[in-house]
Length: 356
Ligand code: WQD
Image 1 (cartoon, rainbow, N blue to C red):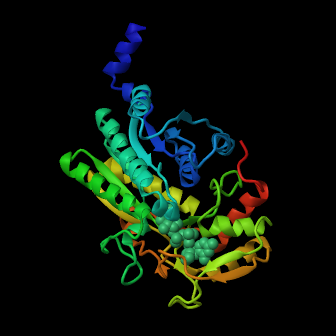
Image 2 (cartoon, rainbow, N blue to C red; image 1 turned 180 degrees about the vertical axis):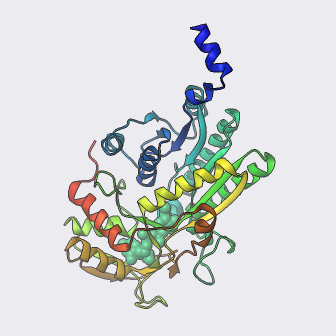
Image 3 (spheres, protein in one colour; image 1 turned 60 degrees about the vertical axis):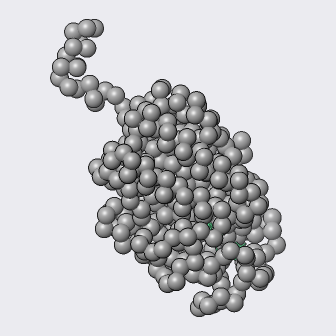
């Protein structure tokens, strides 16, 4: 035994024998679970923690059905320092992809303290435990909401940032906290991915968007109509200064978004310091265009009810994704029809969503 150990250590081959792992916070959530699948299929060892605030345990089985692999999982809350310390002590973690956080814009207006305590407080605890474990690579789930209501579109990473709600404020503050950490310790590398509007589902129909409670975002609300649970989709405003009067957004397939995390992970392994990237298709579609695309994909008529504008909504948001293409070598590949097709496929296969 000692002869073998001596040989392995002397040959320097010991490094190949310690599997390096990516820790994914919020890894059973909508975007987190799709990213875990892409990580496994790209050959990474993955450790996941989640508190199941907006996700379900059965997602882990779905990930195994898709990949054939089980991920190491901890039920934990990012605000629990001792739980995080246990994860870092039991696993050789070399980077973190940080999804965990509350994400409902409207809810954040009603419960700002819960959002600040969870999203910001939890991220501080996570960063403290990362630093204590010597883990200084992070890909952070940020949002285009940090641009507020921009003067012009498409949005570039050098645009002014501001928040129009507490949820967006937490994303902006966390970006700034991570930038300060990188200044305080040049060994850190951080990539903030500013998502536009993620929709769709894994092509297998085993993973998809299944928010707890009443959904806020347009696609899960359209799915309620397609499922026959709701009579019609509410269209929040048809009097915006847009081609058909309804809100314009940059919808991106969740699998394309997941792939962007793989590209960013490679970046943080090679370049120190703080960076941010817009992750969108670079094209805006109106609410009516999205509903029409969904009808084409599903064969379902989606009745509409025009309502007043939703407070806090902006008219137009879409990305200039040039930087992600030039620096990360990433660009979206899937179309709006692919997004609608895959979202509907998930609904057909999971008419009542995930069932634990
Ligand atoms: C899209 C468009 C609505 C519902 C938010 C966050 C962002 C990210 C995604 C978390 C808008 C319209 C919606 C409905 C409608 N959040 N709409 N009827 O507001 O662009 O972005 O969610 O990751 O950070 O800001 O997304 O899907 O809520 O709305 O007409 O019933 O659909 O007005 O134009 P949003 P959304």
